[in-house]
Amino acid sequence: MKIGLLQIDIKFGEPMANREYVKDQFLKAADDSYDLIILPELWSTGYDLTRLDDIGDENAQESIQFLQELAKTYNVNIIGGSVANKKGDSVYNTMIVVDRNGDLVHQYSKLHLFKLMDEHKYLSPGEDSPSFLLEGIHFGGFICYDIRFPEWIRKPVLEGAEAIVVVAEWPEARVDHWLTLLKARAIENQSYVFACNRIGADPNNAFGGNSIIIDPWGETLAQGTTQEEMVTATIDIARVKEIRSRIPVFQDRRTSFYS
Ligand SMILES: O=C(O)CCC(=O)C(=O)O
Image 1: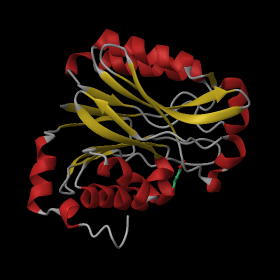
Image 2: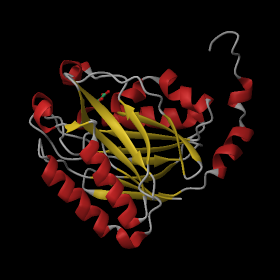
Image 3: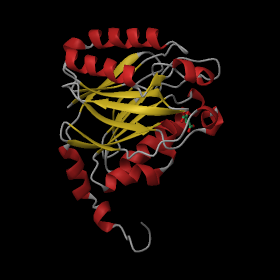
């Protein structure tokens, strides 16, 4: 499976311009035969939180249709980062997954809102399961701050997930945490990690790039810089079983002492 993490800059509060830009990037990648392309968190609006009521997407409909068209046109599965999803009086930060036929496979709204960036003032926390199946692979999909909660990442893994996807707008100031947490999540869960971050800056933060693909042994297969790029690796999901039988962490758990 060939994976591409679309590490891009995002225009602050300009969904139309960001959609056009993402469309151009898919066209550019068209000849590279990706099986799965992953976008960053809030790729259509950025963190323009005070305007999400205006620029957010009613029930994520426009974003879903946009991603469905791209998936069908380029015959590629898409984990469409996340978008500002308006539902009644609330706005959620919602991941959208569509398969290469253009079918909507999964939606997940960020569970843990990040107070340091005021998310709790403008967004509502989700209540969705992070588990989904795509191309026969069981994934757990998460958004940014979620990776600081190992017990939440573990949940889909205990349900059978072999790959953890993370979409983010992770600040440059804490890139060391980003890389360390992602590597730990890969090793402790003996799972692939595909983590797509944005680059560039908004009025409040500079973002750290360093999108990364890590194998279930904790080895980095590909890592971005702080420039715009497609971070790419080809993975073999059978490696998960191999690693899990080498060190059988999941058989050795003492669940009568912890859940
Ligand atoms: O946990 C962090 O340091 C960054 C989290 C974050 O930026 C987010 O969830 O949007």
